[in-house]
Image 1 (cartoon, rainbow, N blue to C red):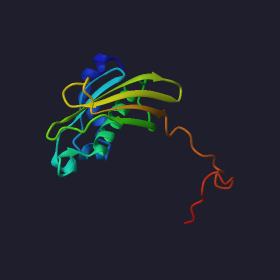
Image 2: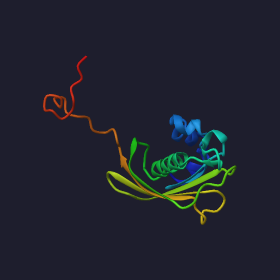
Image 3: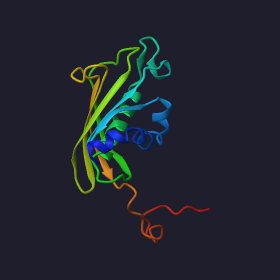
Length: 164
């Protein structure tokens, strides 16, 4: 997908790439910008996202989810067509706590796509990408739903047979 198409269809991308993720909707995650292989997203500060009531700092799980989602969007924007993907690995380095009452911004860049795996780097920050709250490195499986177990997989002991 070229950058012009991405810019023209950013509202459609919001619906397609975020709306189907219930947690993304619950924390009001939004696409700020996108281009080929890259995405910027935000999570508005909300008291319901606080991890520590004494400090007002948002929960680390919100940051993890935001980095995972923005990375997935960057992967989708690196592919020639939309397909199912799944997070294989996501390493996050937390560098400092988020600042209370400030929105969270995330950016991800899908820097390599192979036949089966896409590789992404991400950053979570407030106003300055060079002053990160956290950074991430991830790997995503492509076409995550393309193979089905063989018809006789239960008989072969490859999957558990469900008794009904």
